[in-house]
Length: 504
Image 1 (cartoon, rainbow, N blue to C red):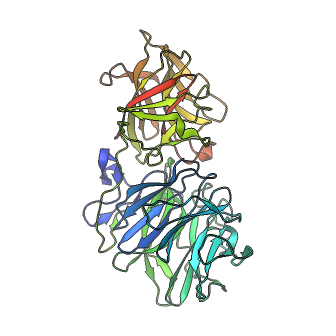
Image 2 (tube, one colour; image 1 turned 90 degrees about the vertical axis):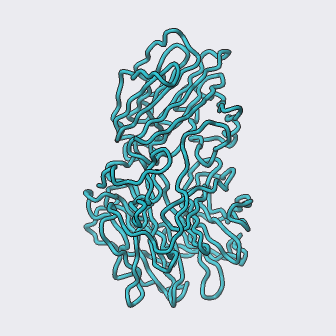
């Protein structure tokens, strides 16, 4: 596993892929950005990821070298359901995103920056849509389990029944995987062939579960021939630096070299979620894509001819502008959840809800560093006794840890499994004198979590409880990753100011 000293450091010390010497080190996008879908559009590249229940959702990122990525912003104001494993494509000058969200939907725009249409239901089930135009000029949408459905010429409706067209690649029977899970079809045409890249093996299981495979056909109607070089990428051992490597898309580099963009877990840091990796691809003389191999945890040469741009964005937030969707998203939101947040004069005010982090829909953001600290100023509503404001590391509303105060006590939240250890938390300590305004800080140093409080944001006292947080993941009964979150519970309004993030 690469040491932290090898990583390039960007804004606020956040790690980035570009090492500044013509090489890069994975991940190219750190933190929980699963199911990448990437579009080459001239000299520009655009990418988006599963946004799940985030409102707004689907942040589109931009790059000109495949290594440095900056977000443009969210394009989906109010998804119909959890949004995962989309396909971002361009056809006849128009951009489309096909997405599973309570059934397959599509949105479209004439400019990548929008405005984007409202979601249009295609009235078909399944997940992981993949768009392609056949040799007949007709449009098709491939789905999980090897299924396919024809689309109308405008791409906004189906034009037939779902049919089974591909059975997948049969990996060796002694491979340890989560399950077959034929999914994430991504298609392209090159030369005489259509290429179909799929994921198999499952994402959340053992480290050796996931993989990317490829098949090809001279017709979009098949038959599909599996590559003799399968899989394209796969984790063969739990000692490798990246686990569950899969869900890949082939993409051409700026000067004609080829790459595979995919996601994987970092060995020892499942709490960071599925991160985005880049790996070089070569083409065999008989026309098969083949990964060049090597250690995905070591520096590699960057794609040739790209133009490096800015990467990432500051996570520190002075709350002078609305960053809902771009950075912040409510957990387990209701349709009107964003109405709880108000911005004014450097203050984020969140209307209280529920009684604890479990039922108040905390406001969370993705982090990508192995070690970091976050702090925030919190002010309770003096007219609303019983209000609680706090700072969390949140896996899901049933699995989190953090610190809070209710005007009289400091609270520590720790939850090892759903439904336990929540409520008022542990380690309640009196705050003397009783206060309505306090600064709280969490330090996560490679899973060792400590909590701090301060009256002024400068002089900090460490609270007498520490937690080891490596088990706060989906495999431990949690969610996609461990995210930083603010929460407001109880009857009043909680004011948040001066959110600060610093990679350690």
